[in-house]
Amino acid sequence: SDVPALTPAEAVPPMFDVAWGFTIGSLSQILEFTVDPSTIALCLRGFVYSIRIASANQMFVARDTFVNSLAKFTTLGSIKEIKGKNIECIRALLNVAVSDGDTLQESWAPVLQCVSQLAKLQLQARGMVTDEEMF
Image 1 (cartoon, one colour):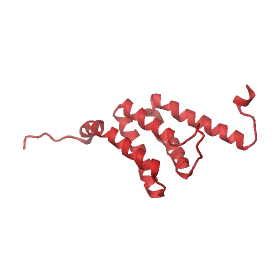
Image 2: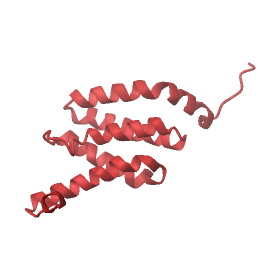
Image 3: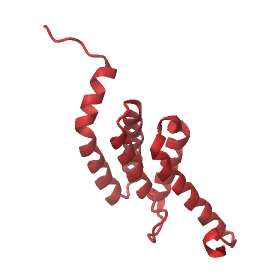
Image 4: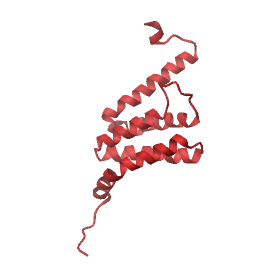
């Protein structure tokens, strides 16, 4: 046949460009409502791999959207109770920072905000004064 063979590097970006909006919608809905640990783990793997694909292909809007969404699922900085799946989201976000930090660029902001909020929670748990209380 006359169809040229594509390498994965050529085929993945246009497919991901079409699918990432549906992917984040699906992953977010499932993660929001599930309590099953294996389903949570699969959703988080989907987030991590989507961030990697978007970063590797310089799809900044998709990367930023996935990172921001994952950061929101940590529930840090909100008044919601932190549950087991939120802790798993924190772990996933920190793992993305460690393994893919070189490609995060502007997406570092929500990661650093989560780290800051974790530090604040740690200070409060120890009974120490936070910057907000001091100033």
